[in-house]
Length: 302
Image: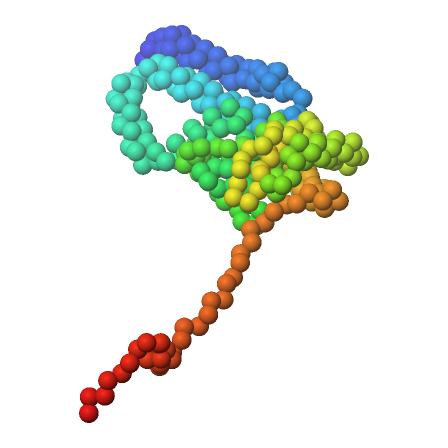
C-alpha cells in the first residue's frame, strides 16, 4: 500500500502539482498582459466623447476577456488533472455536453444577448453619450451592458433594449455630426441672391465666439434641390461637433428668418381661399319663374 502511495506521489502527484503551478502562473500572467494591451488600445478621446469613456469601455471589455481566459485555463487544468486522479473524463464530457445543450436551448436568448453585447463593445459601434436610433427607437445612450443597451429619449422615457434584438443601429453623433436644412423661398426670388445671403449667414456663424467653436465645417449651400408646390427649395448643410448639430441648427434657422425679413426675401406658406357660394332658391320661386317666362301660356281645363 505504501509503495502505491509513493508511486502515485512520484508520478501522478508530481504531474498534478505541475498542472496546478502552471495554471496558477498562467492566471497570474493574465493581469499584466491584459493591462498592457489595454494601455496600447487606449488613445486620445474622440471629439465630444465623455472623459474616461474609452477607458471604461476598454476596462469592461478587458475584464470580460480576462475572465473568459481564466475560465478556459481552469477548465483545461481540470480536464488534464482528472485522469491523474483516476477519473474517466469521457462520460463526464458527454454529460457536460448534454447539459450544456439543454442549458443552451433554455437560455439561448440570454446567450444571444451576451454575444451581441460582446461584439457591440468590441466594435465600438456606439458610446455612452451618443444619440442613436436602434430599431426605430431614438435616444441618448445612457449605458451599454453585456445584455442590454439603455436609451433615454427627448421626453425622458428610458428604453431598455436587449442586445440580441438589435437589428440596425444609426449613430447620429459618431466622431462628427451634420445638420441639413431645406430653405423654401418664393418663385419670384432670385435664387443666386438667396444663396449668397445663406452663405453670408454661415460665415457670420463661423466667426461667432459662441457658435464658431462648435462648427467643424462652414455652411455649405448645395443649391436648388426641388421645385415644390409653392416654393423653390434650396438645400444647405453644416458640420458640427457631435451632439451640437441641433443647437447650431436652431440658431441657423433663427438667423435665416431674421435676415430674410431684413432683405425682403419671402418665405412662402400655403394659403387657402374660402368661397361662400349663393344659397339655392326655393322650389316655389323656381316654379313661379317657369310660369312667368315670356311666350308661355296656360290653358284652363274647366
